[in-house]
Structures are given as C-alpha cells and as structure tokens.
Length: 271
Image (cartoon, rainbow, N blue to C red):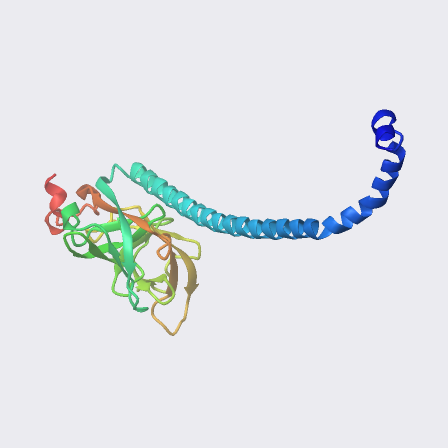
C-alpha cells in the first residue's frame, strides 16, 4: 500500500475523504484556543477604545478652554479697538490717554468704586477723568504708586455736570447705585427734557471735557406736588461690563473755558 500510495497515488481519494471526516474534530479541538484569542482581542480592543475615548474627552475639554480664552481675547481686542477709536476721535481735546485695567470692584452695594492698575508712577492724579468707548465712566479719587481708586458716575456721591444735547439745558447728574442709573437733579417741572434726550458732559467742573456721552433719559415723572421733575438717566458707558477704561489728560482749554481749571487739577498741564 505504501508503494502504491507513493508511486501511483492510489490512496489520495481515501486520504481526502479521511481529512474531510477528521476536520470537524480538529476544529472542535482547536475551538477553545480560538475563543480565547477572540475574547482576549475583544478585551484589549475595549480597553484601548476606553483609553482613547478618555484621551479624546480630555483633549476636547482643553480645546473648549482654549476656545473660551480666544473668545475672551477677541472681546478684549474689540474693546481696545473701540478705546483707540475713541481717543482718535477726541484727540483734539486730549493731551494724552492710557488704557487702565479694572482690578477689582467695591462689594458694597451702596457704592460704586473700582481699583485700576495705574497709579502715580503713570502720572495718574486725583480728579482725573475716566472714559470708555461708549461714554463717561468716572474719575480718580485716590492714587497710589501702582494703582488707583476710581469713583463711577453711578456712585451717589458723584456729581456730573451735563447738558441736553438737543437744546443745551444744563444740569447735575448723580448716581443711583442700586439701579445702576443716574438722576438729573433740580430740574423744574416745566423743563424742556423728554424721554430719549441724550446727555453729554457740559465741560463745567474742571474735570470732564465737553461733549462726551453721559447717558440717555429713560423716564421723566412730573408730580405737581413736588417742585422738581424726577428724571432718570441710563448711563452711556457699560459700567458693569468694562475690563479696560481710558485714563485721559484733557486739554485745559476744553474744560468749560474756566481759567481757574489751569491750576486746580493736574500736574501735567505744564507739558
């Protein structure tokens, strides 16, 4: 049989049939090993996917943080552009202007004060006006070497000389901190001031140059039993949103034309 198989391949058919019969037994015998390999591969793949998923989640959170930072930088850049534009538009009234950042705010709800990152080393002086791209913000009331404290126009102790842009009616606007608004004082009931009137600085008082936006009249209440009208003004500047403001050195000739302003305010006048 060996000779016949070797020389004439007489048993090839028989061998093929036997292989077909034995194959299921071989497959059954090898099945545990294959199942073990499949299970191991599945576990490794699941673990790998979980690690990759965790890594992608961390990367996603980091990208969100970067996106928020970029959004904040974009908003800051926009604000700085507005401040620069404001300086360029009013450069004929200003000797100099620098950008200051608000470091902190007063937590007392009855006061409106902020701390700025500029001080006497930057030639900041008491009484110096502070503006933004939208309008008047306040003035400096205390100066240190590296920082200063500013009083916002919505503080009840602040008085801002203003006039109605439409007809030139002058008045004094003081702060209402709880409402973040202004009120126009001592205006008779028959005064020519209506809702929608724009108020600008009058230039009086030796602080703010004339013509800077101060606010818009949002309510006029006339009570015949009272001698004066109750006039509410919404500030032009976004006082509760700014991160940067402008410290300005006004040209003295634009401070209401008052000769007494020359020596009353800032040391920079000799420049």
